Amino acid sequence: MAVFLDWLTLVLRWSHVVAAIAWIGSSFYFIALDFGLRPPLEPEPGVAGEAWQVHGGGFYRIRKYLVAPARLPKELTWFLWEAYSTWLLGFGLLVFEYYLKPQIYLIDPNVMALSSWAAVTIGLLSLGLGWVIYDALCRSPIGQHRVRLSGAGLVLLFGASAFYLSVFSGRGAYLHVGALVGTIMVGNVFWVIIPNQRKIIAALMEGKPPAPELGKQSKERSLHNNYLTLPVVFVMLSSHYPFTFSGAHPLLILTAVFVVGFLVRHHFNSKHLTGSAPIYLFPAAAAIILVTMLFTSYTGPSGALAQGPAGFPRVRQIIAERCQTCHASNPTYDGITEPPLGIAYDTDADIKRYADRIHEQAVVTKAMPLGNATHITDAERAAIDHWFRAGAPIDR
Image 1 (cartoon, rainbow, N blue to C red):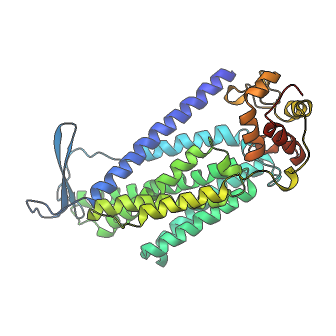
Image 2 (cartoon, one colour):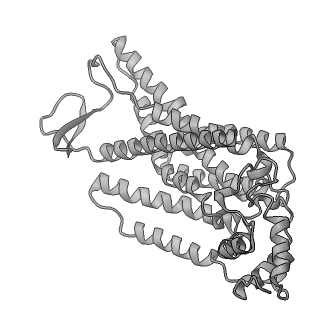
C-alpha cells in the first residue's frame, strides 16, 4: 500500500507540473503575441494587428481582431483545460499531502495549536475568500487604474502571506500562498475569461455586435495571470529549500519573490510591446535578490544556541528521540511509512554521513522536525551545532 500511495503522489505531482507547464507556456506565448502585434501589411476591416512568426521550419501569419471576426470558423481552439487541469491536480495534491495528514506538513503547534479540522477549514475558506477579495478589487474603482490595482494586489498577497505564516507551519503557509495565487488565476479563467468569450460568440451567432468591454476585461485578467506565474513557480519549488520558509524571514522572502517576479515579467512584456524595456528592471530585480540573500543568510548560532559543547553519545540520543521516528528504516511516526528522501539514521556511520544535512535542517533552518512534532529544544539544537562544528566525530 505504501508504494502504491507513493506512486499516486508521484503521478499527481508529475501531471500537475505538466499541466502547469502547458498553462504557463500558453500565457507567456499569448501575452508576447498580443504585445508583439503590428499593423497588418494588408489592411483588413476589424483586424487590430498581425504577427509573422517562424518556427519549426514553417512560417505563421497570425491576426487579431479588434473584437471578433464578422463570421466565425467552424472550429475554434479553446485554451481552458490547461488552467482547469493545473488547478484540479494541484488541489488534489493539497488534499492528499496536507489536508489528509495535516499534523505532518500543515500544523505547527509552535505557530498555532490547531486541530486537524480547524486547519483544513481555514485553508479551504481562505482560498475562496482570497478570490472574492481579489475579484472585488478588480471590479471596484481601484481596478480602473492599473498601477493602483497592482499596489492593492501586492498588499493582498502580503496580507495573505502574513496570515498563513501566523497560523500554519512555514511549509504549509508557503504552499497555501501558492494555492491562493493559483486559485485567483484559475478563477480569472473560469469566472471571467471563458464566460466573456462565450458571450462574444453568442452575440455573433445572434448577429449582434459583441460588447468591446468583454474582450478588454478578459485581456486584463489574462495579463494579471501572466504576472503571477513566476511567484507561483517559486512556491512550487520552495518545499525543496526549507531555509526559505523555516528561516527567520519567510515573509520577507515571499515579498521579495513577488516583487522580483513582477519586475522580470514586466521586463519581457515591455520588450515584446515596444522592442525595449526600462533599463532598471533587471538590475532592480537582481539587487532585491542579492539584498534578500544577504539579509536572510545564516550567520551562526546565537542566544539559546550559544551553549557548551556536547559529545556524540548525547547527539546520538537526540537524533534517536527527535529524528529517527521518521528517519529510520522502519519509521514509527504516524503516517510515515518509509524514511523521507530515503535518508535513515540507523547507524553511527549513517549519522556521520548525513552530518551536513542534519546540521542544516535541525540547526541552520530549523526546518526539522516538521512542525517540531518531536519537540526538539534549542539546547538540543545547540548540542548538534557544537558537535558538527567540532568535525562531527562519532568516536567521542
